[in-house]
Image 1 (tube, rainbow, N blue to C red):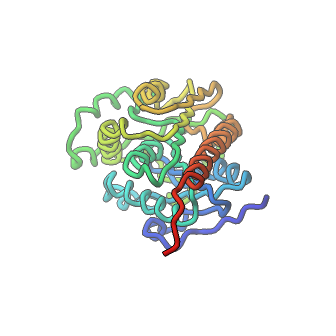
Image 2: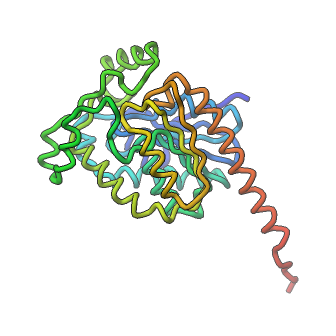
Length: 301
């Protein structure tokens, strides 16, 4: 089926996207909220979004608060700002859809866990792509471990974490395309080059809050993580599988780096996510049908 892509213009989250990178793909009554990574944009999710839209789903890809603009704009935000903009997108999606699956890449997956824990009636499933609790991949600089000692935003703001040489992408063709696009971009299309230290600190605070909520995530979960992830080791995924008190499907990729939604096995990410969404939607529809059939009849006055 053909998918209609339009820019969101009615939510606070989209209004924060100064360059209009937030987008929606209209579809059926099952919706998928896809949240990008730290210092990224919805462009990271576009391939997966289109793949899911072709299956008939409605897909929202919001721009988190402060993202898609300048370094000054992003360092002025906190993780609570990012969360609120994602929650606003969830509320808008619920106006169109009866069943919603929340997904995200890296930082976006952690925000997805927050949404699932805090909104059990609005979120029916969680899809986590390269979930990043710890920035501990094989390509991370040695001094990244020392950053754990930093507690103050002012000090953190003095630091900048450069992108890994790989950009989190194993496929040379895609990597060079992204590298060239980043060099020519103002940050609105593909995000900023490098990550300000203050944002790494906010990410750590987001993760600390998420760990306290894991026991409240009762929705079924899909985790897609690469064994060769250069930003976040596979132990991020295995930790979540062990801690989440729900059914968890763990898909381990063997030919990708961190940006699994863009990398060599992106087609497999779409396939596994589409299958997961289908199962969640069927289960949600079955529950709704049973509830309707067993409801007590209402007598006329």
